[in-house]
Each structure stands twice: as C-alpha cells, then as structure tokens.
Length: 401
Image (cartoon, rainbow, N blue to C red; front, top):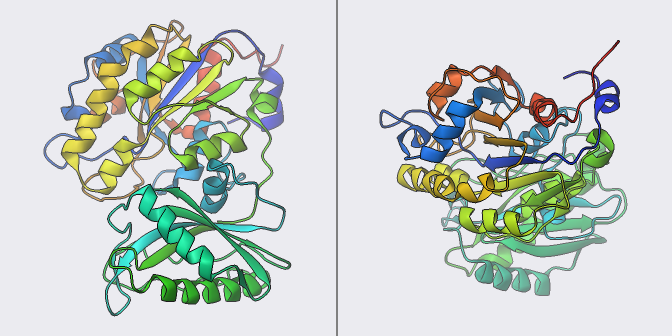
C-alpha cells in the first residue's frame, strides 16, 4: 500500500456505498475432498463470482498466522504491524467499557482443568453467558484489589470475559497464559519488557486467588488470559479515508474493533438473515458497512465441517437482501482462515470476492478457494483491500498529473 499520507490525499467523499461482508475464518483446506466453501450450495455467491472478480488475500504476510485483531485491521486499511491492538482492549471496547490511560486489559476464557491443573477444555464447553455472569459475580465478591491495583471483571459473551487492571506503573507487555493446547498447564504471565515486572506480579497474584475461588466449579474451574494491552491511538476511518463507516457485528470483540477505528455501531442479530435485515433497515446514512458473520470461525475451531458448510449456505440464502440494496461495491471475504482440520486460525490466504459495476471480470465461475487461486485479483496483502474497494466505488482521485 502506498504511504498513508499520500493515500489519504487521494480519498474523496461520495454517496456511493460499500459493503464489506466478513465471514470470520472462511478459508479452509480440503479435508474431505472439498473445503466447506467448495462443497456448500452457494448459487448467489457463485453468480457474484462470475459477474465480479476473485483473488486471495494475506492478512499479514504469507506464512504468518494472524489473530482476529490484526486480520480485521488489515481489511479496514490499517497496516497491521504499525497499528497493533491487544485482544483485551478489543473485548473491553466491545462491551462499551471505558478504558483509562494506563489500564491493562486482557481477554479471559473460562476453561476446564483436571486435578493436576492441566487444561482439558480451553472454552469450558462454551458455557452460557448467564453462567459466565454468575462466575464473574463470584470472582468480584472475592477479588477487588491486588497489591494496590484495582481489578475490574466484566462478562463478555459465553465463555469470554474481560479483566482490567487499574493502577500506577503498569505495563501491558505480558505473555499470554493460554498454551493453545490441551493436556498442559496454563502458562505464566511473564513480563516481555523490564517495565512489565510489576504488572506480571499483579497478574500472577490475581490468577492464584481467582483459581482458588473457581476450584469448586465442575466445568469452569480455571481460565486463560490473552491479549494483554493498553488503549491504542488509532486515526479514525473518517479521517484516513473520508468514509462514514458503520458496523453490524453481534460479537463484542468485533464491535470493539469497529468502534476503535471510528465506525458507528448499529444494532444487529447473530444470524446472517438477521444481520442482512438489520443492514437493510439502517441503510442510507453511512457509505461503508462492515457486516460480520462469526459462526464460520467457531465451527472451524470446533472442527465441525458440516456446521461451517451450513453457515456458508445460510449466508448465501440470505444474500439477496444485501443485493437488493444495490451497493456500488460488495466484498465477501474472511478475516483469516480457520481450517476444520487444524481447529484454529491458520496462515492460509483468504478467499476474496469483489463485485462492482466497475470490475474487470475474470474467468472464474464459482466462489471457492480453488477458483480464487485463478482469480484476476491474484494474491495480495489484505491491507490493499481498502484501496480496491474505494477505487471501485469511485472514491479515489488520480495520483499525479
């Protein structure tokens, strides 16, 4: 991508509209002969592929497995190495929690551990949000402060929660405690810089006390902390790209990410049909709409091929509601790949579909990983998706004389 200041000077405000539809974790690798995207019945997406153009995008760089934060930041046009946002900050922002300068936030996953402290389920069976609230209430009643640092605990959704450490001299450069594997114990929150020594000691003490409180629980008797971070300073999309952006995302972390880049947060539902109906009901005031579908990713993480295929088909069946709005640009892609075989994020590139009246069509005939390999867009960094969307929406001026 060209230097930010030059690109910023080319952007102009128009009434044309862009829809960025992100099927979280969409990309996959063939486990049963075909990927879920290849095996799914997707007549609407396939028609868009024939009338548009396809490609593959790398969220960070070839071979690098991204987290959800940098993967989305790339799609929003921000260099993911320059603008790094910790998961804790995203989760806190997603539930409208107001972080203060100097806070250290982390995302927590309730988990299940055996008698030796080894993790047997990293998500505690995906407990309900109501069960999460009960556990958070129990922890709050026992833990308010650690070594002079205030501890703030908030439920997010299902097994996820946020913990915020508020006090003097804290630094968020801490290693995560999630081992990303089963049958092993959680990791220590080691300091990654000398300045984080105090924060490390506080977090260790918090973990020790919290595990004592959770010990009687049969399912959520442990937890894992990820994405320690302090609040970032991001220029808004309205400033960088002269857009009036909005987001429809049911999951808190993605609302948080959208809020951090200046998107207006619109009410929506979890299902594709519900999300698209919400988009239609709120169409008009904004010119950039980010629509997020989560279940493709969670199905991939569970290794559930059939479920991932089903979600893709639900998106396709509901897609006419978006097409009826006639956006000047529609992009359908993933933030990262979550292959069912690997049960987690991977380094594989994202299938990318761009539909617009101004597109240079290629010869692809369906929306799938294999077809995207042949697509006219080729393989490109995901951060270049924003220039592509703006250009096809006629929102970029000419560069040079």
